[in-house]
Amino acid sequence: MTKQDLIETMSQMGGLSAEKAEEVVELMIAQVEMALVAGESVEIGEFGSFAVSGADNANNVSFQAAESLSSLIN
Image (cartoon, rainbow, N blue to C red):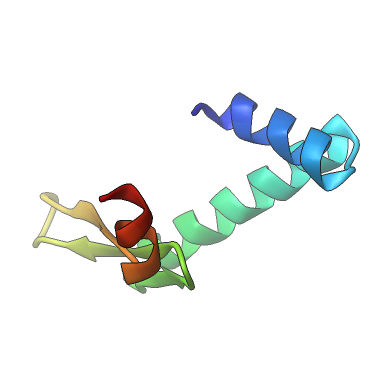
């Protein structure tokens, strides 16, 4: 699924205009980016968490799926 796919799905299933769905997706991504840049972890319940690890310029972003998501995938 691409960002555009997500926008289209939110528009269709959420009853949002394409413009509003794009705004929501862009805002969510921006908030996650800002938190990670600040060294914070991001936890999205029932989905998972993102965290920055590493030192100096070798930072990596890791994702840990929530147990409820993992059980759906596996």
